[in-house]
Amino acid sequence: MPAFAQDYVPPLRQMRGMWIASVVNINWPSKPGLTADEQKAEFVAWLDVAVQRKLNSVFVQIRPTADAFWPSPFEPWSQYLTGTQGQDPGYDPLGFAVEETHKRGLAFHAWFNPYRVSMQADPAKLHPDHPGRKHPDWILPFGGKLYYNPGLPEVRKFCQDAMMDAITRYDIDGLHFDDYFYPTNTTAFDDSATFAKYGAGFPDLATWRRNNVDLMVQEMQQRVLAAKPEIAWGISPSGIWRNKASDPLGSDTNGGQSYDSLHADTRGWVKKGWLDYIAPQLYWYMGQPPADYSKLVPWWSDVASGTNTLLWIGQAAYKAGDPAQAAQWQAPGELSAHLTLNRDHPEISGDIWYNANDVKVDRIGSITTAVNDHYQRPALAPVLPRLAGGEPPRRPVLAYALRKPGGVEVRAVATGRDEPFQFAIFRFGGQASSGDFADARHLVAVVPGDRQVRWTDPDGKRGDHYYVVAVDRANRTSKPSNGFRVI
Image (cartoon, rainbow, N blue to C red):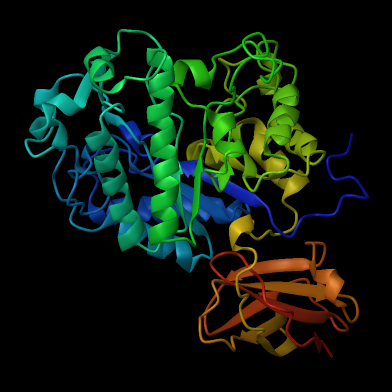
């Protein structure tokens, strides 16, 4: 089956993201103790990977373990920067990362882990000024790690305050949670005293825990809307809400259930409208017996249908070509087939790849295959439904489209007061009508915004018609510019 069917119309808008993980130095920085210049060079190299793979967004982990990749008044500098928690890395990693990301016309989503405090279990090894040292009653050990206790109202508020500090101080495009909420459903995570204090009115511990996570999600939405309503707020949960055997509303699967094990009612958040998007981690191959990708995609599509919550799919780039994985993951076309299936579900408006290193190394050519099959055209990131009605950017002016050595040079000029975030450049064989800009069939480039931009189309030729559309930070688009015919 050809991945790029003849009647397929490439979408104008599609989330194309990748996760850049910092916990235990998975991606960036690649090891603790690199110089500031080395860390900067590494991050820029990750952005180069995103551009090369035709992505439009990065999801960067800036609070991996109740610490910070920025000078936070709430939590210490991350140990993954220098090797020592609380040690100043000599620059502002978050400020640098946001600026460099935007220079390339990419969106920056700040990825936070809400409750994890440490990857080891000894509170004495935390920085002396760490909130967990100042408030030992806030933290609980489990499984060789430390966690903030989600049942404490003061913990919930503190975690929100710590994350909102980055949101309000930096020019980021999104606030993103991963799938770590409560660590488990066992009593070994001993919050019994907290339940005794705050659990009145709840039938059992699990219901109370779910309510605590619900409050974190709902309150986070309210705080984002109040402080910075133009950014996206979403979560990438584990891929199974509940199995059908546990709940008739569940999926036809037999795997770990976020509702029960992590106390995360992921389906409920979508139905209640608490998220701008949800990005379930569907890290299974098509046909996998306990959890089949091709069964979970329609299930999640049905959950998102009729809501204002966008659906993006977390893709397991890390499994493709890994010799330890099943035979299906040794097929270069497995991930591409996932995206082909997604096309049958219009509720899905994109994908996020885990993780950046796997997107880069491209074992067995699986990423190249997916990019070649599905990312032939550029794509703008989706517009959040709640922002779709906002004022679009002003129509730009296309100053010229001239043949020069190397192709056709296009020069566009912004006309509005605000500088566009991007310019989308379209090329047609003749004059275009307004409906021709609704998809990406004629979209040849998305370039970073400025007051004016020059871009050279290596495939441009005499007789081509060019148009330019301005794009704002919410991904809203202007009316097309005047057309310019190459002579």
